Length: 607
Ligand code: GDP
Image (cartoon, rainbow, N blue to C red; front, side, top):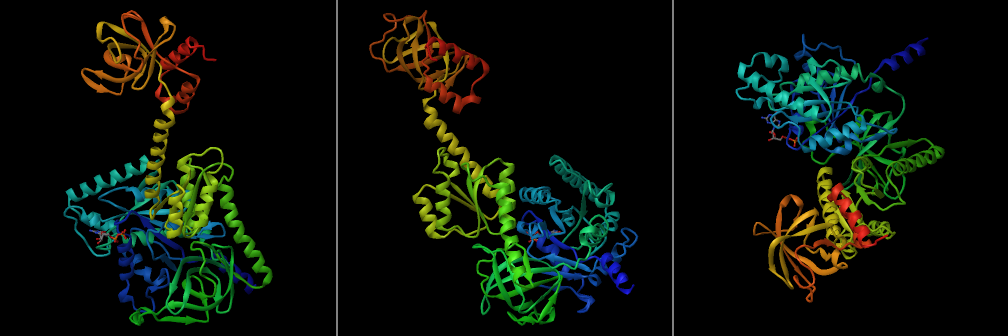
């Protein structure tokens, strides 16, 4: 019976949620975290906040003050034992930390600067959260910057709003509504958290200031409430082991270490762990389990505390052999025996296979994608998928010569589209040899720390490649046109012929070869220049009225002798030129233009 009761208790117990902070640069992510850490200095060591590796732990006691500030506004009974907030704000891969195929970040805080609204990286973060189905709230930060805002340290924001003057409220509402509108433009409903009719359908906005701490109690308590209600199921404490690699770091005296977040379970020195590596799964034994010194000892620089065993949830640095190729963002397993080692190795291999299956088409031409972590790789691939850019190969880690070779192979097939001879490298280094090799072989490598930047430069490049192709191969294309000579407008009767014409149908373009159908398709030369109202132009259409054209090339042909102003002039089309037209300029021609193509095709007897 005792056991049954314990089991029931266990089922009820919630674990500590893991929170990530993300958003555009300079919106205040770092400062929010700092300000939250400072809340509790007076609470002393016991109830205090502990800085861990890669995360900060806010125990329940550290939330009490926030709870106090929300009395009468947002009363809740705390059931969660505290929070783990991931320390490196803004890193997209953290929202993608994997654990059992789901993401490890339980809830995210998307920070938006109320003065600026949704910015580029905000949208990027938003996409990541939506793709990953990560629950999130929005901290509408910097409210203290509203003109004549009256601040009160760590105040509940609704209390703060109540004491503002009319005009400050006015500005607040205006900026709030602008942000709500911007979310609506993204197809998302949003509302102030206390007006939110349904947190599953509406994004909750929490006005905050990282300078004054206003709204931070609301932020903490509102998240607690969501965790204890809507997301309760996910936070039920499990006995399963759950651990993710946050970062891979070289530390003097320790070699390559990994910073992990142990969500559930126990890790001990000597344990066998299995994790993803660039060259396949890594199996190793824990040499040391380290955490930073407690706050008061923080001045002892570089010194870590050694532990024999550590329980989750906790941020830990692990020292072990063979971690050089570890992949950040991947899951870490603890294996109890050889059988489990084999099992987890297979599981890790499957992870990459799953991603390959979902995003990569090896058979067609496409770009190569490389990223620093499994999480960011997936995020990048998701973006490419949405943008309909095919991917033919993926890898994690720095770009080496072998990756360039892979990129070359992928374009060695039949359809060689230059824009696909590309490696998109996100947040990874490119070795000098790889860069040299790429340059020598016409492979472009795009690198960036922000996904959007990567896309911007790649998109620009794709457009340039396509435009180049239009002017190179598309040069073969001849636009259809039907011209009539303007009566009396013969300025030069032989090479170069200069006449006034009106475009009856089609498009007159520079370079177009012309002939006179009524004179047995007599070639008269090609268009060298066009003038409209005495200004040179690249093309002329029926709507332009009459233009002057200079036609050069066929020296024997003379107006008055071989043809006259009563004859119509058309462009000379061939099978090839029509094909180019179809391939490169399909959208540049109207229905009527295509009709003329068909008419001319018949005229020239093209099958
Ligand atoms: P991050 O890039 O998102 O981590 O932004 P930071 O936390 O580094 O903040 C960027 C700048 O905005 C810094 O100069 C902060 O002092 C300032 N800042 C952040 N939050 C607030 C806020 O709530 N109010 C005001 N007035 N300034 C803020």
